[in-house]
Amino acid sequence: MQQKTLTAYAPASIGNVSLGFDLLGAALKPIDGSLLGDEVKIELAEQFELKVEGRFADKLPADPASNIVTLCYHHFIQCLAKQGCDVKSLPVVAMTLYKHLPIGSGLGSSASSIVAAFHGLNQFFSTVLGETPFNDSKLLLMMGELEGQISGSVHYDNVAPCFLGGLTLMAEHRDQVALSLPTFKQWYWVSCYSGITVSTAAARAILPKEVPMATTIQFGRQLAVFVDALYRQDEKLAAAMMSDVIAEPYRKSLLPRFDESREFAEKQGALAFGISGSGPSVFAVCDSLEQAIVINQWLADNYIQNDTGFSHICQLDQQGAIIY
Figure (cartoon, rainbow, N blue to C red):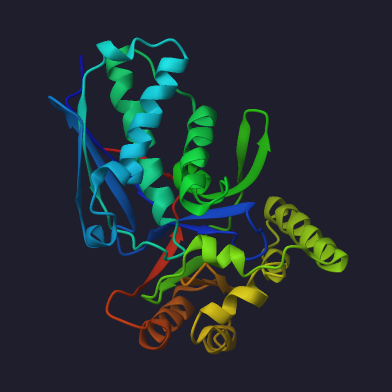
């Protein structure tokens, strides 16, 4: 029976996770149950249209045709046609994007919209076609293509955890886009958005074009030891690897009060502190809720720059994108 409407939700995410530039990503879920991610509703319609609602809807382009969700829809239909589907026989849908994440926040805002759109469309049309049109690997490739249109380059460290949930390592080998990693269930991830905007393209432009050999070796060592420590559940060693030698030394100049915030978090015993994606959001990893509460409050009082900012105590969202 053909489904008439559904809604897809995709969580916010941390790209890089400090030590894994473009290779690690983590999905976030506030412990208080609040939404930290975008929703996309899909329903049958006479003609395609996109509506945009939500707290940050007014920050998106006024023309729905240029919205990334519209581009996702057209790309999805094109991919269906390429694999032999008679797309002219398919029902038309209308879509509504509920934009809960701020643009240029370092929380995977565009990835959340993209993942919710593709995941929703894939599930919606499965009821029409009698089978799921695309498997997870193909969907991730499609998500990465659209994410690349926003950021200027194809990378999966936001779309993969947003879609799959948890902590993910990018493989990008044949049809294996990302791998799910073990995590520490007792860790709390304080995530704070300052309220200012840092574009991914600008944050990438500030980075050097070449990385010294010593830095490259350190980066590879940290990532390898971190993954090994996750599998052996060596919390202390994993946390010791969570420093950014690639991007943070340059990007922190774009983030007011970053060094001060790091210093406070570390004095409170945070296991790690870093830039979420390209910034301006930051994150602190804590091994106790009491510690997380203190750091969360300080960041809310001191790191946030205006009334659009927010701070949440999170744990990793193990589900990723969901349908309801």
